Amino acid sequence: MSLLKHPVINILFISFMSAIYSFIFIFTAGHMEFISILSHSRTLNSGFWNGWSDFLKAGNMKYIGYLIIGLTIVIIVFILVKRLKDYDEYQVSILAKSLFVAGFLSIIMIPFLMIMLLSDPAYSTETIFLFATIQWLGVLVSYLFFVVRS
Image (cartoon, rainbow, N blue to C red):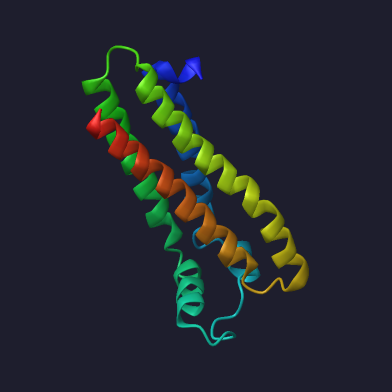
């Protein structure tokens, strides 16, 4: 956890992971092969899942990718403006706990995603993208809150 003391390491980690997520979201938005693996809308009697599937089919994931890039830039600016010295033990503890929760949720979701894929692959792509969106935006918002408060 001593790596988390250095703001530059945090910038590199957040930037690298955000680049991966935003690339996936922007690249797949409107891509012909991605749209073909999505479930056909209105197959479930659920307005939420049908709406989410329509959102993905319309290529709107690129806006979530842009939001990730924007939040990352704001976080980097706050770190560069406010933090020129290393974080103390209390701040490192908060960062470590938030990253642990995000990693734990990701690990816990793997068996559930596998069961979902094996039992009924309909809407599995939509579910994976919803989880990735909520998980990484949650990390970015909590990190932004941390950076603004510290």
